[in-house]
Image: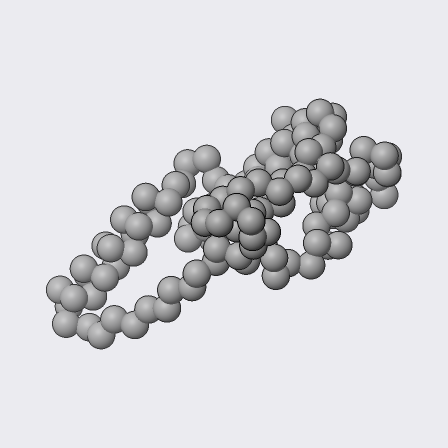
Length: 130
């Protein structure tokens, strides 16, 4: 199992104003200021994990987030196309839309720690370097 220095997992968390009244913290989102090494390490790991998941067909074709070749307009086009095809075939259309604006606040941040990421990476066998 890999070991990542605990000092490099520290972050300076600052509020970043989004919209609305600046006096309410609910109108801010937290950003983490991390060391340059941690930032580079995170980018390398993101690249390797995405390559691994793409090479082994782990991600579905409907996964548009965090993928360089698929953007939100691709998701919008796909949805519009499926709705139009259903209408042309006289099918009923059901849909559910969720507002995920504050979804990050519902995540258990302990599982997102950098040490957890190092443990995850040590489980996955990466045979192809970047």
